[in-house]
Image 1 (cartoon, helix red, strand yellow):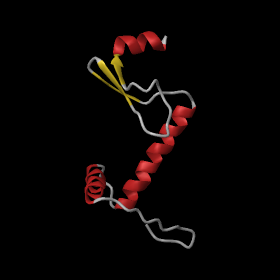
Image 2 (cartoon, helix red, strand yellow):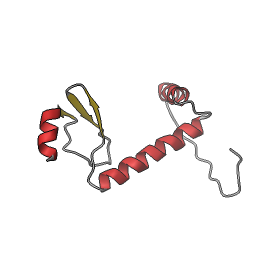
Image 3 (cartoon, helix red, strand yellow):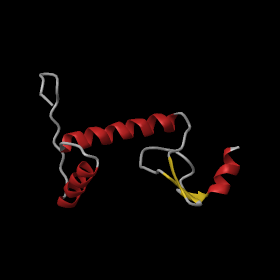
Length: 93
């Protein structure tokens, strides 16, 4: 990505472990740079925030368990991020 006069440079301070985690995610997602990984993460946070604002939950379905996405600053669901699918289906009707 070429820098333009309108771009803002942001510096992040991270532990070695956090930086290694960022690099692992960058590689796993096939992204070229740490900046691309941070941009992708911001896009996900923006989407989660819009969905939560619309009253939707972000969940992963697998087997007989539903895992709900929980993140500080984003109020979605009921705080307990695991319940049985039968309970979820009953509450969704």
